[in-house]
Length: 262
Ligand code: GLP
Image 1: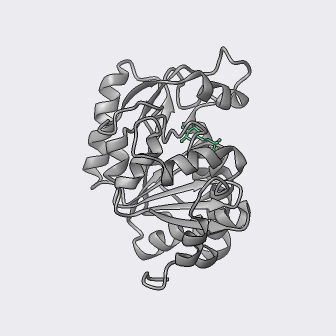
Image 2: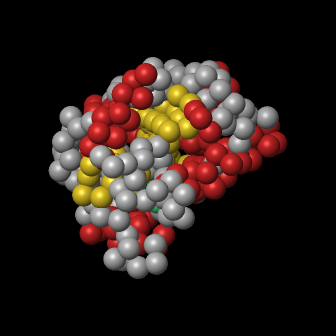
């Protein structure tokens, strides 16, 4: 895994935006996998800013989000559909018909999960999957002990995750208990993965992901199996890593290694 450590969260967000923007610039018809959560908001701000000021165009890009809460229709204020429209899609030139999220209000969430997986395959697969990380090491909504071979399916959320996401809802009771999420194997099938983590609350999960054992106990550790996975971290999120000096030798200032394209 490439580990890029930036001095602060703003620099980490800009670095992650560089990676997304480079792909979109090189391959205007690329397929992006997208994530939600607080960490992603400044990334979408930055990409939206580059759309306005640098002419970065998403007109031909297709997107697939990782997950959606079961029970919430797309127009629900707390759905990930709404999050994506407000944080990103309404601020760029993307064709809404090319944006995809699982339907949380599907009558048959199991069938919706299978159909979502098929839609990703029909689009030719995901070129770059953007990821955040939960404090318990989850990616998407693949909670600890999720099968490393899992595909898009229904997951029951842990109380820890519900407490972390409670801030987006009025009460803990209203915070959804289930989600449709891409599986770990779905994520690993993306041609590249880019995980952005900022802040001290993510330090333990990041250490488990990068340096811990490959284990369903830390679902993000599955990225160790991916041949093209990049973690973009700020110093706080990198604080529990033991090999920081090594990562900084290979990627000084979070730049590509001398052997990579810059
Ligand atoms: C949710 C999302 C994840 C995200 C995580 C962390 O659980 N399903 O994709 O990575 O939140 O969110 P935050 O960035 O708010 O810490």
